[in-house]
Length: 263
Image (cartoon, rainbow, N blue to C red; front, side, top):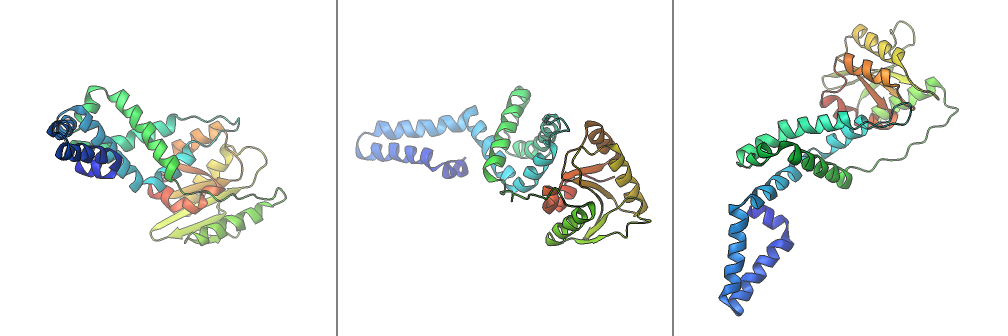
């Protein structure tokens, strides 16, 4: 409670002013301030404030990973439509596995038990607002329409190397569909690059999955400058293939660390 009051100094200042007024003017003002503090401590208002405080600190700790996951899950389909279902499901899992244990330790989880849908929806909204405020800015990367497929592969390799990956292009024959093999610590990722003007379909997902199996890599990725069809998203989800826009490549480590793209 006191940590919350310290972080929200405007509210704490009001309490101090009330106590100060009580010392200088009338004791009743100090008693009012004390009553307000006890009210916060003994009613559900305190529990709500504590839940929000714990949520804020947990989200700030994981804001980069959450921002990356949100950008990936809210990517538009081939018709420009965005579905929030997958992202909401991920947030529900984050709340259940990361936040609820903290609520239980502080004995404020009873609020979620009374009205879970209402409070989970509020927490999702709060998490999205925190991500909006604190997510790292994205550099604008514009690729030339005249870029060839091989040039796109070289571009992706360079981005991965700048991000600390040992990334190398495959020879182009006998690789079973792999364009880039990237390694970092104990992670080995097979990447297929698709520079398209149209949409990327199932074939790319199938080739990436086969290439990862051939290369004994636990992670399979298809990266493009375009968008994926709905069926490609469905097939990728079923087979554990990660679909990415090239602007997400600098955060590949965060994405695979979260479990995405693991077969």
